[in-house]
Image 1 (tube, helix red, strand yellow):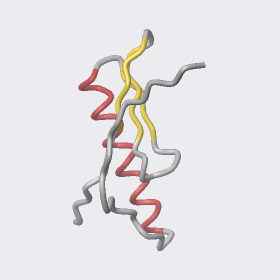
Image 2 (image 1 turned 90 degrees about the vertical axis):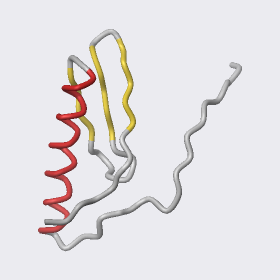
Image 3 (image 1 turned 120 degrees about the vertical axis):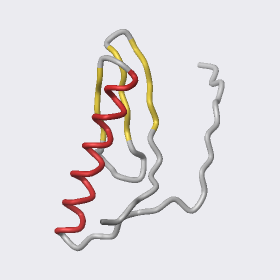
Image 4 (image 1 turned 30 degrees about the horizontal axis):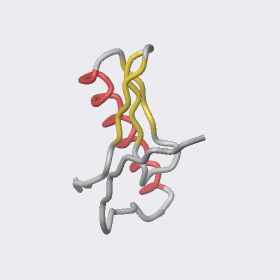
Length: 74
């Protein structure tokens, strides 16, 4: 069994929580609580990686990480 270190971003809105993994396009999950969304995104990531392994695709690993907040005037 291999272990992968991947980034996960979470957001909270009026419907609960949303999480996605930027390295795995299309890999996202929702949950009513923060704990639930983390469990759900773990499952989504595991399934996504298993599919990539089966398809003999690379598993992207982050080379560097940057998180910032921007203010945009419109």
